Image (cartoon, rainbow, N blue to C red):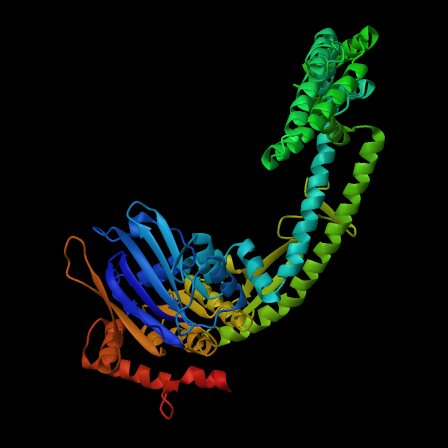
Length: 587
């Protein structure tokens, strides 16, 4: 629930604080005073587009700060944790959205900077803003379908359908590609196949070219290596020069001289020299083994050079080295699987498309069933609400029908004997239609509802949806446009009823609606200077009566004041001081 809203530098509002009532809060004001800035502010909090043109002239930025009372739901708590935000001591959290004069937007959640997506994600289950644009959007079939899905709770079915459809469409696209580009694919397949076969024939091992270089170098330099190793061994052991000096004999002579000195330190050194002698003898043995293995092998060298030549042919064509050649082969083999345009492969792909289409059809039938089952109930409940909004003779119908398709269309899906269009949102066409009165024709609401009637239809639908809607705060921007008199009173009554289960904030120009509010704010236009500044103030008692009188007739005369007092009296239950509509909701 929204407990505080602080707006600075937004439009004509320089600085304003609103503390909405847990029930029904109304915002009024003269045309142009800036009362819709309250809705704009809440729209920014819910992820609305940050327009630099909304920033107050002369201000660096517009800032909207809101306090949301806890406890948070699981989804909002998860977002808060993900950005590292913390709630206040009372469990509430602070949300901030700022828009700079340069158009840059920033968001903060619980004292921590957060992406705007996170701000939208945390407010989605908390605040819903409904404006005149939503009423207009209800004229579109896509929005009517979305409303029905919202009422039916068909998110899971729609998600399952979309997943099945995505797999089916991918397979259909692949089949079309293989069929329409068969020649190009066959040419590409031939090139890849030749390369893969050539590499397979040579059958190189990973790193083989590096190993060959080392072995060829060793064989080519065998004489030089033999001479160096033999001389090193002779220097250590004197094997070819028995009478000459060598490392082993010199070390042994030194050791023997030290052993007979009788000095402890020198005798310790003699022990060390013995260890050194052992190391030298081991090194000499290793050199002897190396010399024995280092046989000149011209035939072996020729074989290796030929192998190098074959590998170089591969590296010139397919990669910088053998490992790159092997990587090319792996990629080519993978691509060949997708290029297979043989009749057998195409038949297998056609079968897969048929199986996936059947899965989509099953998901579509389930989704259609969920929608059809909910359509009649939604229409019945919305019709009942219209009776409370001075449209008692009107009947709302919600129909669900299939969208037919040409079998050759890319999204054509067969369900039973019929071909239907399988779009992203299912195969259904949802239409809201209205019978204005008995004997009148049934017409789509786009043709059969006036502007005022459309606002009431949207409100009726919202009241019906509210029972299952998890959103705590509902904001309405002049949904009473185009109505007046008794219809306006009934709209106020139903908004008050909605406030029995939700926090409701309404921007209105109708006194009949404002009279039902638990808390009333007025936006006053400031002096007519170059910039302009509006103030937001709460009104109650005589001040509220005066504002209602202004809204009724633009004057604070006795007649208007009396009418305003009558509205307030009719809207409040005298014994409890509660809106009469709240009493209706409690029954």
